[in-house]
Image 1 (spheres, rainbow, N blue to C red):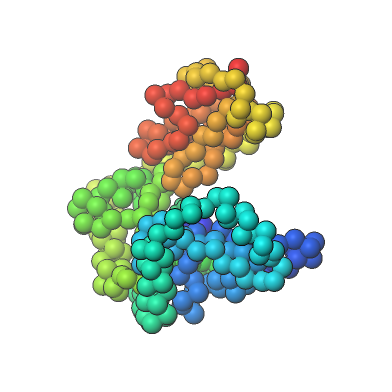
Image 2: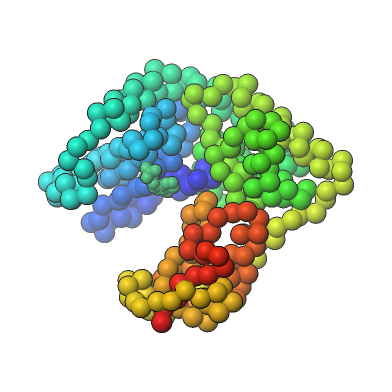
Length: 313
Ligand SMILES: Cc1ncc(COP(=O)(O)O)c(C=O)c1O
């Protein structure tokens, strides 16, 4: 919460349902540590009824990589049990540099987060509106809400120029090489940029103005057609449990030979990291075709190497 693309669900509602059944709600807020610091953003999970919230502060706050925070937000959580679990998983030698970096980031956001993020969101709104009016597919709060989404995190520049024949990966490369702008990630359709409190409004304007230039150039050159068509996501049947498939005897076969077999591994386009195939599922031809089109467009697919993947023997 939110997703890589800034899409937010209604945590309050989820918390009500979970609590009605006497359970606790844990939220992976890896991409949302900044939400608490700006009144123009969707509500932070810590303030929306979640009981435990995990954050990767290094993703959206000015904290060093590998610095994370686990918030306990209600008295429904058994702190003693939580401590015992953490003792099993954590190092006994914490890094004081990383902890100081988290503290520093939080102090920075406390002081400047509201003002700096609000300023950046204001320019984000102006520029995305301009691009949408021009015909560029860029995610905005209005657009997502009209399409059934609860809320949108307007620190995400999610842009697709697929309509003028440019894939997300290609757009990422053009922005880096020609405009010296590094995006957070790209997939088949979209590039995603993270707008943080450390950015300046001019940086955000420059990103959207560069996209506008690329779009208009492509149109001028007659690029009118989509390059990528995403078919409906193929639904797979779970034949055996994930655990049994993962630990079973397995063999490496070519993607063609894998059709109809049970996968022993995860096949995950990364980014965004959502599995196409999970262990135990029967592999379909459409899924393999889909994975291949992703690979052909220069996107990494974890679990397929040299056109081979692992299936249950
Ligand atoms: C949704 C989600 N949760 C958790 C993580 C892991 O975060 P970390 O970088 O702190 O290991 C990621 C990493 O990208 C993520 O996308």
